[in-house]
Structure formats: structure tokens, C-alpha cells
Image (cartoon, rainbow, N blue to C red):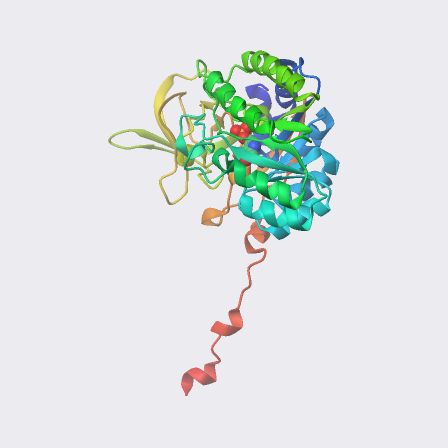
Length: 412
Ligand SMILES: *Cc1c(COP(=O)(O)O)cnc(C)c1O
């Protein structure tokens, strides 16, 4: 995806706009598949919450991916996008029994992450196979905001509760067909991940009817040249050997499942915003774009350092800028970035804008959410229209009668 094509899209569809490169999503999918080609049965369930546009879901379904969902709405989106119910896994946390039952009635694989719901669901539906989410208490990532496997995490059933879990399974006669973990968002150290996997294998031995083991996700992608990224190929080699060995011990070929979000779509995404104002202050030069954390909240929420370039002036002299938004809050996208000289009206391009960017956008400041475009085989396809004023008013109830005091009343 080159800058010329991105500029053309910004001109045609306006800014701000999200652009996704289909080819990059496909190559990442192939890369992960290749890394695990030594496994007899591999399932990649794309984590829909990273980027849930129905056209992106269709693309992934077309590649042969399954779908990992965290809400009944994502389940329904997946079904609408053409996924078969059996290709969808529902991995929510903290949702009601009713929502789990609704998903189950649609035929999707249920994954339960607490003993209370497990006991209630198992008692009512002992014949429905269920996957259980285990918390191995391993800190896989470096940033506590995005690590979910450690001791204080709200996610999963603690490995220390296995005896209680087994008692529930035994008493309800429910069928556990899968076992799952999702340790955190960034796997920096493969050995830590493999260590957590050992805990999962150990736990798996307690269940006789397993069909799959789901290792979650957390593949780290580079945000700039030289960034640490998960070495997928090395992880593939090591985990494949260990997994195949486990299946032999277990006496059955199981499916190895992953549920990557970021890995598949992060680098495929570009966010384009127009510079409204270049403002020189006593300490810095601000470039204010027609966006803010209403469109891209990751830099403010997680400190994510999205690379920013000026695609309108790629040969311009490099200068230092603080790139900020137009929201009435501090919404700094990047401080002290060296960027080719910026003029008002230029289009800035934010990289790694595929995962958790559009899906976390909002209408804060009563702004419109941006358009989304899919770049596929050299053509730009609009896959979401920019919002309009009607969208801002949608679902609002204007109780104007309450505040229109009749004139006669006022005079009395
Ligand atoms: C969010 C999530 C994922 C995807 O994580 P990435 O870091 O985007 O790959 C996978 N599994 C579960 C259960 C999740 O909640």
C-alpha cells in the first residue's frame, strides 16, 4: 500500500478515513498458518473485536479463518458475514447466563471463564459441549493494562480452582471439549508463553473428551523499524513439537487453536487525517489534525506509538512536531516526532491503525466517526460511510414539550 494510493483515497473519500490493505491481512494469515504447518489440525479464529467491519469479517471467512467473539452482537455479525456457527467461538467475560444461552442456541462454541456460570450452564445444558478459559497466572506482556493472565486479572478460571472445576463437571455431567488461555496482549518472550502452555497441557490431562486446545493470542507486531515482535516462526517450531508430543500422550489428535486480532489486522491499517492548523508555541510546533481520541484512542489509552508521516510532502525537510487532535481534552498522538515539513491541509498517515482503532472510536464532542475503505487488488472499496448529523441524533429522544412553557403560564 503506497503513499500515492493512500493520498488518492483521502482525496476521493475525504479525511479522516481508515484504510485497510487486504493483501497484508492475507499475508499475515498465511504467515501464521505456515508457522504451524507441522500441526495436524490448526484453527485460527480471528478476534473480531480488533476490527469488526462486516467486509473485513467476510475477507477473513474467505481465507478460511474462524471467528473469536466476545459479545452476542459480534456472534451475530459473524453469522451475517457468512461464518458457520461451528466456526465461531464465543469467549466473553462477565456476561450473563442469558447471553451465553443465546449464543449457544445459535450453535456457536461456548467458552466459559468463571465457575458460577459454568455451574449454572452445566446444570441446565449438560449436553452442550463447553470450552473453559483457564488463567495460568503467567505475566506474558510488559504492560499491565494489556496483560490478562496474571494473578490480579479478572479473566479466566484460576488453575488453583481446578479441583472445584472438576467437581462441577463431575456433578453436572457436562462435556468439556476445549481448553483455552489468553495470557495477555504482547508475547515478548516465547519461553514465558511456552511455560504457560505447559500449565495448559497439565490442566488438559484432567479432561477426557477434548477436541481442541486454544492458546489465545498476544502476538506482538512491530510499530516501527527495530521494534521487538513475536518471533512467530520460532514459536511455531517449538509449540508444534510440544503440541504433537502432547497429543501422542493424550492419545488423540487435537486441534491447535489461536485467536489473533492485532497480528492479522494491525499493520494492514492506515489512518489518514488532515492537518487543520500548524501552531507554533514557545516550546513546540503543534500540528492539529481533524481527529482526536474520538477516532484513535490507543496513543492516549495505552501509550501506543503509532508512526506518523506526512504523505502530502514526503520529500520535505524533516522537523519536530507534536501531533495533536481537535478534541477539548489532551489528545496527543505523538510528541517530538520528526516529520517532513507540515503545511495546513496536508494529509498525515498513522500506521498500525488496523487493530483496536476504528472499533474503539466514539462520537465524543459530537463528531462523526470516520469512513472505512478496503484496498483490494488495486481498488479502493468503501466499506463504511462517514457518519452524518443524523447519526449523532439517532436514538436521542428530544423531550422538547417538557421545556416549552406556554406563554400564558409565564404571565400568570
Ligand atoms: C482480544 C482478544 C484476543 C485478541 O488479542 P490480540 O492481542 O489482538 O491478538 C484473543 N482472545 C481473546 C479472548 C481476546 O479477548
